[in-house]
Length: 340
Image (tube, rainbow, N blue to C red; front, side):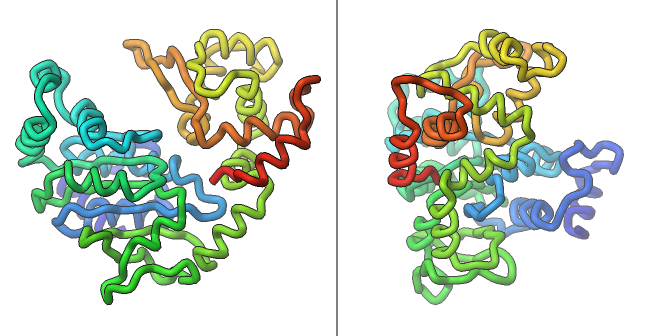
């Protein structure tokens, strides 16, 4: 905590100016912030690895929105899945998030190499933080490493890893790859991926392999596990999303009215319904697609990793019934393709 206090003093942040999400830091959040702010000058990656009971998206979001991060990094971007694997598309996304909107029109017609040069020049004197939520493949890491400049100024990439098996591509200092029977202990794992320094946070006391088995042994996987921990009012609102087709861009005004009509909103207020939706977004269940100028959500969609849960759970618990759907079919499908 001393590191954070010293940074606070240097940045001129008083205790009264702290945002709510930085008050009463627990040990895990303190550790994550230290890795982001106090780590090496080299561009490095901090990875949050899936572990039972940890909502990676919310955990990363709390750090991303903290006053420490906002004051330390000159620019930052949160990029959600699904990611395109083509380098030019990922580059366009990063430019859109990091660079001033006034410059986008002059960049859009440039070729890939020129865009990369422009981005490098813009970031040359800036400390930046890029968050990639729900990384499923090392292909994304390969592209990110090629695109981002290393200005030796403490810039960071923060990622959340859903596929634990990905860590087998990482090496310890002795050159050995991480094995799934490895039991992480004693703080973050300091490893490399093709020479790129990684710091992996894993809050578990069992091996990586056992973690995978425990997640798969739960009927609904990690998304279902997290869903079960939602407050009752949010659980109802989330399960109701099963009435919408996958990948549909949902009108929030229509959604709020439906929630109210079903009796899910205690005070029948659209403001309360919007608050519930914001909590589902923060928890990683729903994605905000379009927002109005004032910041209110205009449309939203279901996160792809939540589709299997919404496909099965409402029918298993008889939350929704249909003469065209057999709950046993969904249980079989879910057991074959558990959502991680």
